[in-house]
Length: 93
Image (cartoon, rainbow, N blue to C red; front, side):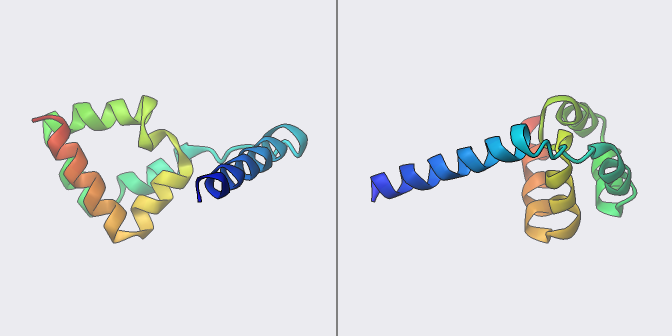
């Protein structure tokens, strides 16, 4: 079972390397997705708290809000949104 997991992990790493270095497929730019996220009502309410704002600003630099795919997941999936809100609120306490 463990060896199967290692094989799957190795294949994923090889495919990621091919995508990045051979095909040179660029990573999506998070700025457009971030603008869309900042227009969401739940995000506006979360960002209005000064303590949450400091945590979220940190996430924009080196966290989940620096990746376009994660931002799109927050916009489209309610479960990811609820988890993100809970994590931000726990982070500043």
